[in-house]
Length: 209
Ligand code: PRP
Ligand code: URA
View (cartoon, rainbow, N blue to C red):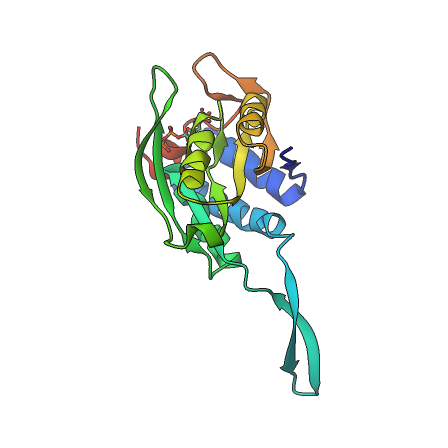
C-alpha cells in the first residue's frame, strides 16, 4: 500500500501559511512555492541509493559516498506544477523534466489531458510527479496513469496541500505510488476546492483569473 508522508517541518509549515494568505501576491507566492518544493526535495529523495567512490582530498585518498546512477525524472502537472520544478532542480540538477498538461473541467471536475512530453527512457527512470494541489485526486490519478501507460514503473507524487479525499482516492487508484504532502487540509468544499487551501494554484502562480 502507498505510504503517505506528511511534512511537519516548521519552515515548511510557516511558508505554506504565507502561501495560503489571500493578501500574498504573485511574486511572493511563486518564491515561496519554489522554496517549499526545494525543502521537500530533501525528504522525497531520502531513499536514493548510494555507492562508494574513491576521491582525493588535499590531505589523502578516501572512500566516500555518491548517489549511484539513479535516473530521476520530474513531471510537473501543468500549469501549477511548473512552480515546483526550479526548487527541486536546485537540489537534483541532473533530473530530466517531463510535462503533463491537465485541467479540471469546471462542471464535472474531471481532468482533461492536453499535453504529454516525457524523457525518452521512461522505463529506466524514477519519476516524481509534482503539483501544488491534490483535491479530488483526479488530476494526479490521470497523470500517473499516463506515465504508467508509457512504461514508467517507479513513481512518487508530491504536493503542497492535499485534501483527505484526494489522498484516499489516489492511494486506492495507485497503491504503488508513495505520496508526499507538505500539509494535509480538512476537506473539499462543494465545488471541489480544498478548505482552507489556497484557492486556485494556477491562477495564483501565474496571476491569471
Ligand atoms: C489544479 C491543480 C491540480 C488540480 C487538482 O489544476 O494544479 O492539477 O487542480 O485538482 P484535482 O485533485 O481535483 O484533480 P487546474 O485544473 O486548476 O489547472 P491549472 O493548473 O491549469 O489551473
Ligand atoms: N485546484 C486548485 O488549484 N485548488 C483547489 O483548492 C483545488 C483544486
